Image 1 (cartoon, chains in turn red, purple):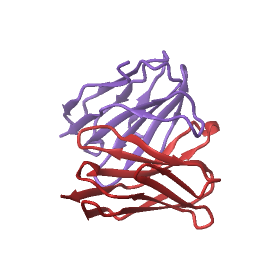
Image 2 (spheres, rainbow over the protein chains, first blue to last red; image 1 turned 60 degrees about the horizontal axis):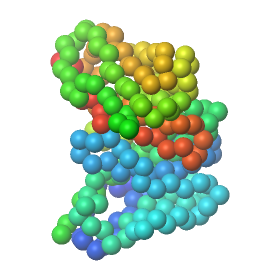
Image 3 (tube, helix red, strand yellow; image 1 turned 90 degrees about the vertical axis):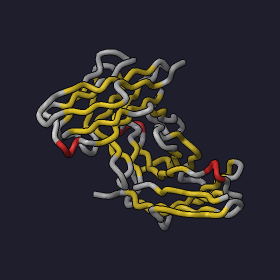
Image 4 (cartoon, rainbow over the protein chains, first blue to last red; image 1 turned 60 degrees about the vertical axis):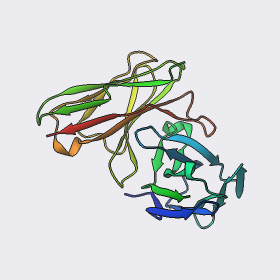
Length: 114
Length: 114
């Protein structure tokens, strides 16, 4: 049972370009929608997250757009840099009464070319 | 603070052998989690714990066992290792299970079963 679908699987962007990664989820039991960034050989690290009562959140070059009715959210990376090259995971988070569990998307491998 | 530490970093097991993956956090976090990461599949939750003495199953618990006798430690036990358990294992912890509580991930253990 796949509750989170992420696309694309891989993405190549030129330096300075915009990277866009999309996620869709299947039910409404979640109360938080984080994005994680993972570099090779490292564990994932929280990049940015949004609550379901907000449609957009921006932190520096990173923006989450959230569409509750469509059950979709996306990550936009503006002015993409080679240092942004990593694997990105969207996730959905259950509430505290279900242990705050995370369900992850399949991941997007981003490569930013200089 | 060291954060979340995992040992060993790498391990090769023969089919049918058993081992324990160690996870320790020094942030006084109540919630701890075990995930496995397979190529192209994202991370999947194996087990989680909301406090010492309390554990619960995640998405893929078969073939694994956990215990939580202290706040700091959350070991994952593999009994009768199988090739399907070849994966990278990540431990994570958070102070609470609510939306704003970030999960912090360890560096991972890469396990190969042959």
